[in-house]
Length: 98
Image (tube, helix red, strand yellow):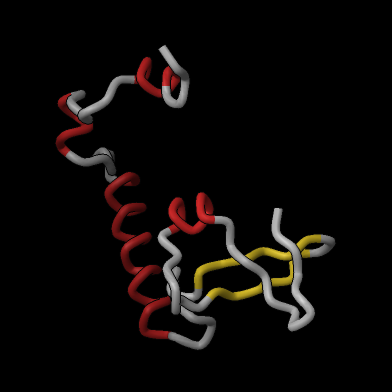
């Protein structure tokens, strides 16, 4: 848990910073979301006014949709072969001491 300082500053917990790739000097956005506040690294996704980036993401999504609608699988060849580099069972053992 973090405390707000007299200057209204907050420290990002180290584990959260590492998990989301936040480094000193990075900008984060504070987004009101009803009764809570979302903290979002500023470099994630297109900015609200960045039409070029928004259109690029839309085009990528439409390409995936068209492939799916045509019956082509949207996953990568390594997923088709079943060799992802991990197994489903591995997900249930993560973080547990053996």
